[in-house]
Structures are given as C-alpha cells and as structure tokens.
Length: 306
Length: 334
View (cartoon, rainbow over the protein chains, first blue to last red):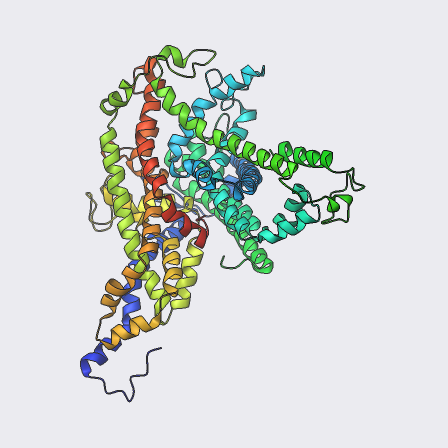
C-alpha cells in the first residue's frame, strides 16, 4: 500500500492530493448511493407502507391495517390459484429447461462447429419477449399453427394449446424453456469444459457406457453448476411474468395467471395499489425465504461467490 | 429427449460386445466386465453411433430454435390465402416482399426504433459510468462503510423487479417540480411520458457494479500509486488509467446492458401506455393489436415482428463473443 505520509518530505499540494484518497471513494459511490436511496430504499419501504393502505392513485392513501393481507388470504378468489400457478410455472420450466439444456450441452460440448450450434440456441436470448410470445402464439394456433399442422400430418389432432385451460400452462412453460435454453447451455458448457477429458478416456478404457459416463462422471462433477442453474432458475421463474402477460394475459380462466401478473392486473387495471403491493410483498417474502435457504445450501455445498 | 438417445446408444453398445453379466445393472462405474477387454482399435462403431446421436439431438434442437423465426419471416411473405391454407404452404408462391416496405407506413416503426435507441443508449451510458465508478471505489479503496456497501450491492441483486413496479411508478409520477407537479409532487404527471422516466429507474445496475468490481480487483495497485506519486488526482486515475485498462469489461457490460434495455418491456409498457410517442419496439409490437386490414393482419403483424427484431438480432449475435464471456465469468444475471 501507499507508504505512510509521516516522515515523508511531501509538499502541501501533494499532501492535499493524498487527502483525496479519503473522500474520493465516497464521491465515486455517490451516484450509486443516491440511486439506492431513491430507487431502492424508498420503493421498498414505500410499498411496504402501501400494503397497509387502501389506495387508488387518484385519492390519497387510507390506512387500513392488515386488511389487505386478510383479503388476499381469505377472500380473494384467485390468489391461491395464482400462487399455485406460480410454483407450477417456476418448477416446470426450471426442471424441463435444466434437463433439456443439460442434454444439449452434453451433446454440444465435444463436437465440431459448436460455436455455430450455440449461436442458434442463443437466438431467443437476443429477442424481445413480445416477439417471442407472438411467434409462438402463431405456431400454437389451434387451426393454422405449424405445431398442430405438423401433428395433423402424424394423424394427431392437436389441442387448442393456448385457449384451453388444460394445455395453456404447459404451453407457456414450453415457450419459457425454449427462450431460456441458450443461457443454461452457456453455463453448462462452461462447467462441462472444465471436466478433465482424461476421466472420460479412463472410463472408456474400462468399458463404461455413455450413460455411465454421464451418470458417474458428468453429473457429480457438474453438481455445483447444476445446483446453481436449478435454484437461480427456480427463483427467476417465480418472478417472471412478461411472457405470460403477453401470451395469455393470465388466461384462459386464470389457468396461467401467476402472482406477479395478477399483482400487475390488480395494480394497473383495477388501480388497487395497496392490495397489489401486499401481493407483491407476499411473493417477495416467499422468494426471499427460498433465496436464503439456497444461500445456506450453496455455502455448505461449496459453491463460491453467490 | 434423453430417453431417445441414451437407451439407443447403450443398446448399440450391447449388440457390439459379448453379452455382459451386468446387463440391467448399470449402477457401478468401471466394472470388470468382458467389455473392458474389448480391443481399442480403429474408429469404434458405437462411438460413431453416439456421435450420430449427438448430432441428431443437436440438429433437432437447432431446428426447434430456428423454426419460430422462419415461420415469422416466411409467414410475412405469404398471401392471406396461403396463410390460411391447410395443409400449410411451406414456401410462398408469390412472396409478398412489399409488406416489409408497407409496414413502415402502417406502424410508426421508425419512431419505435428511435425511441428504443435513445432509451437503450442513455441507460447504457449511465450504467457504464455509475458501475465503473462504484466498482472502482469498492475494488481499490479502503474506506469506512465499504464492506457494508458491497454487501448491499450483492443483496440488492436478489430483489425481484416486480417489487419495484408500483413504487417506482408512483415515484416517477410524483417527481417534484416537473411535468406540472408542485414541489410536493402533486398536480401533474411528473416524469411519466418523458424519456427521463423511462431511463432513470435503470440508471444504476447492481450486477454491473459487482461485475466491474470483480474486474478491477485484478488491477495492480502499483500503477495507481505511481500515478499518485506523480501528483495525479484520483479522478484522473479513474479516467485515464483505470478505464482504459478495463475496456474489455466495459464493452461486455455495455453490450449486455444495451441488450437488456433494448428488450425491456414491462416498465416501458407501464409508463408509456398513454404516451404513444415514447413507445419502444417491444411496447409498440404489443399495442399494435388490430390496427391493420383484418384480411392481411396476420402477414403484416409477422412483418412488423420481423422488421423490428431481425436486424437487431443480427447485430447482437455478431457481438456475442464480447458479452458471453463476461456472463460466464460472473454468473448469469437472475
């Protein structure tokens, strides 16, 4: 580090420059700190306050205590359903997405032209969510969509994917998996490339099958990566709603409505800011609990830096 | 999918070697089976089969990735009759190239592009500046509250964006002394319906600060100390020494932030619903419902999607290598 100024023949101007080192970091942090005040602490506390009020933005907030929470948990006709949907969506898309992207990364890692392949999987990652939603809405159209036309060639009558409550959730899960493959493959590939090739060679010499290689070498050595993708994907899935908002709007008959989307509807369509804030907080607390549990598990499992 | 390939390759493998006693029990690693004695000569047939299987899976996956985009592009070129044909017309007989020109007049596409560009560029510039400044302070200085602030940066990343939608909307709407508001933020629209309202909530990115800090930790302290010896101010150290050294990291951050700002949807939609002049590409696409001639609606909408996404996709894909590495290094953002 910098030698102590004491006993150093330093001119007054230089001493002044040294002093800068004490306040310069605060100056450098000032923009971020100011932002943290206005767009982090104020919103977090303000929306906590809102959860105890009845407020549409045209009037002034009225303190109603815990009534919003009481309403959500006892009277609201859709809250529990949207909460279930949230977990189904997050769980379904993270499990399906991890399985498929793991398989694809395993296939793509030791193969020619992997950069090109990966680029193809990266396509949805650079496309906006509205375009993705509409592309898939066309594909999944009951009559004219390519998916059902393709199924018809095989003699299968495809369902009305997005308009039927029984298939709508599956449809949005599939699209969300499709859209996220590139990111997962990227992370898995990095993990897979870190595995020593000689382990596979040794296993092959001993006559291990591909499945055995996968099961006994790849999976154990990839476990930290796997855990990371599963948990962060799950947490992300709990709060994502843009895709659902555009593709189904939460319908049909609330079949795909997740808490975040429901909150958005209550806030910006019904203009019940207090109740919507309470919903946001309930979901937020759930996510925080899962995140903290995850951090514990990661620390014990030796996953660094997160 | 895994069920389609692995059983197949194991069965190929089984048919190759002598039947082994461990058939059915695939749990143990490296068993002493007769297969172990198989001479390792020439191109192993089941290895070739496995590679074939891998290519099959990847090609199948790649097809799934490309088909939606192709459907969008080709569908835009179809005539209304072709779009409704069953069985489908795969390749339009008379491609309607005209739609791509037409769509510029039917929706304010140029406006959307311009808005997206203005917003994304502003967000990117602000985030790069604030992240590198804060990252520099956290990486290279010791001061009171540093540990505290760094922990906050880590923790803040875990707060989901939906939590901020309502309060940020109210903060922007009640920003004091602008947009007809008085000093207490009452009476007008505040920053709603301005570019500032679109940009400001994204001006600092916690992940960006974290990323810059990680990169700057590796810079040698001697460099900065030498500069200080020469009487260089802390600002000049940041501006003339540190920033040039972390250019690759800045590029990664800039591209990534630009990409996410370009594709940002929910916030922009929330604050520009009533301000068509400020709508960006995703919002415009979402709100353009039913504005077309109904018989040509499907083709025109696909054309709008294609015109608004494909050029930018090409740009981002060509920049891929600059930001992908950065994402791997710091973990993909939640």
